[in-house]
Amino acid sequence: MVRMANSYLNQISKIKSDDPSVRSMAVEALINETLTDEVAEMVCSLVEDPDKGVRNSVDLMLVLNPSPQIPNILVKYISSSNIATRNLAGEILLKIGVGSVNAMIEYLRLVNNDDKKFIVDILGLIGDEKAAPDIFELLLNNNNDNVVMACIEALGNLHFAEAIEVIISIYERNELYKPTIIEAIGKIGTPKALDFIFLKYNEEDELTKFSMIESLGLVGNEEAFFFLLSELNEIDGPLIWPTVESIFLLKEKFNLNVPYDERMKNMVLKTSEEAPPRYKKPAANLLTAFDGNDTFAACVRILGDDLETDEIIKPKILENPKTFFDMVPSIINQNPHNLNKLLGLTLEAISMMNSDGIKDILSNIQIRNLTDSFTRCLDNPDEEIRKAATENLFAFDQNTAVLFLDKILEDNNIWNKMWLLEVLGNINRPETVQAISELANDKEEMVSERAKFIQSQKSVA
Image 1: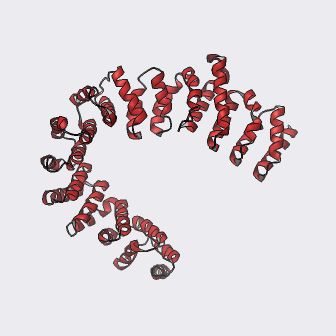
Image 2 (image 1 turned 90 degrees about the vertical axis):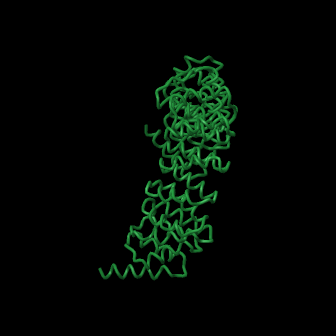
Image 3 (image 1 turned 45 degrees about the vertical axis):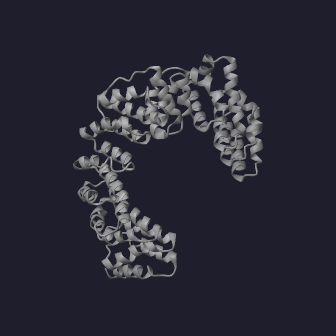
C-alpha cells in the first residue's frame, strides 16, 4: 500500500516536469487511479498544455479514468478563449458521455451565449434525455439565434415531444430556423410534425423542402409515400436524392409497392450516380428491381462507393455474368475511380464460374476484349490495380498471362513480386521456370530468397 502511494505521488510530481514526454507518461500512469480533487484539477488543467502529445495523453486519461468529479472540473475549460483548449474540453466531455451531462447542465446556467450553444451542441450529441428539460427551458428564455437553433437541433436529437408546439410556433421567426426546425420535428416524429410539414411544404424554398422530404421518410405514413411519388413529376436536381431515400424508407416501413416505371427508374439512376453515399444505398436497393443495361451499368459504376451498398448490388451484377463480362472491358478502358473494386468483383465472378464456363457464354471477340482490358491495366501506376489485373489474367486465361510475363516482371513492387512467385510456383511451364530464375536474381533480397526456395522445391519434386 505504501509502495502504491509512493508511486502515485511520484507520478503527480512528474506532471509538473519541464519535459513534455515525462508529463505525458505521468498522466497516462494515472489512468486507473482514483484522483483527489486537487490532482483532478491538475490533470484537467493540462488541456491547456502547449505540447500536443501531452494533450493527447490528457484526452486518453480523462476519458478512461473512473473519477466522477472530472466533468465538474473540466467543464469550465469550455469557456477558454483558446479555441483548441475549448474544443479539446468539449471532445473529452462528449467521449465521457452520460457521465458529463449533469456537469454541463449546471454550467449551462453560468455562461454566455457562445458557451451555451457549445454545451447544448454536445448535450444533443450525447443524447441523454435527462438534458431535454433544461435545453427546453433555455429555448423558451433565450433569443440568441445561434442558441435557439442549437436548442432546436438538440431537442430533435433527444426526441423531446413536449417541445414540438413551441418549436413549430417559432417557425416564421427567422428563415434560418426553418431547415433546423423541420429536421428536429422529423426526428421527434409526432403526427403534429407530419401535419405541419404538409401544411408548409408548397411555401418553402428548396433547402427547406430538402429537410421536409427527409423528415417525411422518418415520420411519414402512406399518405406521405404517395405524396412523394407524385412529387417525382415536379422535382429536379438534389431534391431527387431525399425523395428516393424517403420513398424507399416508407416502402420498407409499410410494405408498400413502388411503381417500377420509367419515371421512377430515371430518378433512381440519377440518385445512384450523382448523390452522396448516404442516398446511394436506398437508391441501390430500388435499382436492383429494374432490368436493362443502363441499370446494370449504374450498379457497376457505384461499386466500391460504400460497403453496404456493394452488398446490395453485387448479387444483381453476378446474377447476369454474360452481361457483366461483356461490359467490363469498356468500363475498365475508361479508367474509372473504382477500377480496383471492379477488378476484384471480376475475379470473384471468374472464380464462381471458372474460365471455361465463361468462355462458353462469350464470343471470341468478347474474350479478346476482356483479356486486352486486363493487360492494359499492367501499366497502371497503382500497384494494387496492377496486381488485381495480373490475378484476373492468370485466373481467366493462363496462356495469355504467360505471354505477358515480361511485362508483369517489370512491376517493381516487392509484394506484387512475392505474390507472383506463389502463382508461378504452381505452374509447370518453361516460361514460368524462366521467370522464377529471373526473380532469383532480383535486387530485393526477400524476393530472390523466395525465388531460390521455390526453385529448390521444384528441383526436389
